[in-house]
Image 1 (cartoon, rainbow, N blue to C red):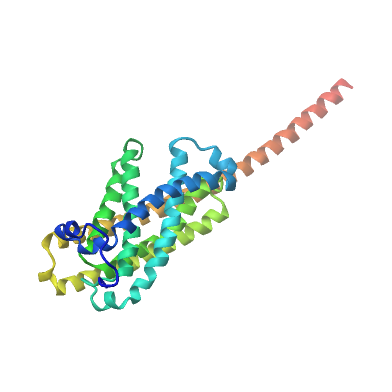
Image 2 (cartoon, rainbow, N blue to C red):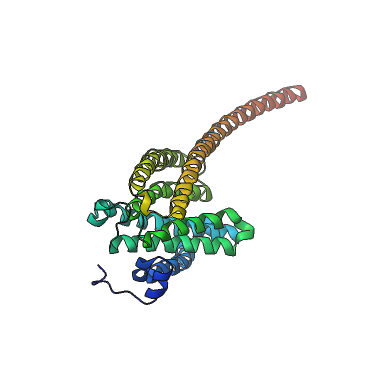
Length: 293
C-alpha cells in the first residue's frame, strides 16, 4: 500500500508521534475540516432561499446553530455511506485490531476533520455552547486519531454507524425551527429516531463493544496500556451516555406530544366555551330586545 500511496510530507514527524499512517492522510483530514467551515457558508446561501421565513427570523447564535446542524446533517450522511464498505475490506477483516488500508484511512480522516472542526467551533463559542461540546469534539478526535498507529480500524466503522440516528435527530431539531413541533411528521420522525438510536447505539453498540474487547484481549500484550485505558474508558462512558440519552429522548418526546394533546384538548374546550358564551349572550340580547319592545 505504501508503495502505491507515497507519504505526503512530515513522515518523520508522524513516525515520531507513533501515528505513521497519518503521513498518507493528514491532507484529507485538513481538507475535511476546511470543508466543514465552507459548508457553513453554503448553508448561509441556500437556507434563506429554501426556508426564508424560518431562517431569516433567526439571529446570532440561533442562526449559527442552524448552520452547525446543516453541517452535521451533511457529514453524517457522507460518513455513514463511506463507512459501510469498511466491513468488507479484507485487510481489516483479517486483522481487526491492527489492520489498516488506505480507504479506511481516508474515511477516518474525514471523520477526524469533522471532529476537529466541531472542537474548534465549540471552543470559539465556548461561552455560549459550554465546555461539554469542546470536550466531545476533542475526545472523538483523540480516539479516532489513533487509527493511524494503526489501531482498531475495523471497529472505527462500527462506531461510525452510530451516526445512523443523527439525521433523524437533526430533522427533529429543524422541525422545531420550521414550526412543525408536535405535528404528525415530527411524531413519525421521532419513532424513526428512537428506533435507529436504540438499534445502532444500544443493541449494535453494546454487542460490538463486547466483540471489540474480546478481540483486543487476545492480543493484549501487544496493546499499550494507555491505549487500552483510553479506548476502554471512552467506550464505557459512551455506552452509559447512550443509555442516558435514550431515556431523555423518550422522556422529551412523551412530554412534547402529551403537551400537544393537552393543548389540542384545551383549544377544543375554549372553542366550546366560546360557543356557549356566544349563545348565552345571544339569549340575553334577545331578552333585552323583548323588554324594550
